[in-house]
Image (cartoon, rainbow, N blue to C red; front, top):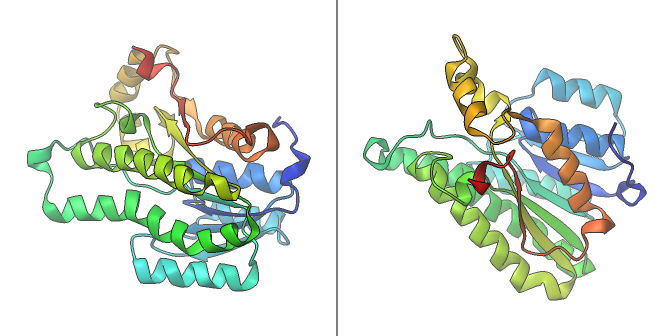
Length: 254
């Protein structure tokens, strides 16, 4: 059972990638806290639509390819026209690059992953930031990865993008903390989500190898990341600024 954070009730949040995996788990736990959620995803997944049926007054779904700048800005404008007060921005959506090294990464692939995993966070943040600054209040939680801290958690472009997410988040917090905002990162390791489904195909040998290489000897769960999310949005984390929170079963301690 998730802890209760009364201060999250009646707040407004935006979550990208809310249709599956970590984004879905974040959305579900926030809704259970009474938080209004604008869920953005490329697909209208059945689990997300089921959440909307359970929380019709709290959840609005926006279908959007976040790699499309124009589309993302339009969705942001739509959200702000209906809910001008956005308290929390969760830039969660991302895609994995199949661990391709540099020579196996095309320029088109580089652009695609940078657009989705990095640029979308910049575009959506800049759309929401002015309102937060006007109110002198807001929390931004960007999705990084252990691939933003060490090599081996992704391929060339994913690792580069996640390192950049961490740098962007730290600078974001540095620039705007004095105005009442905070920006932090989550850095998940091996989390059992649809993005990592390929590791579990066949006999699941890859998934077993990853678990064996993790000090905790298992994969993490999306809800475990979502539980950390709740704390980071609560008053208990008000003095945490520019931090990178590993949720990795000890991966980077090796």
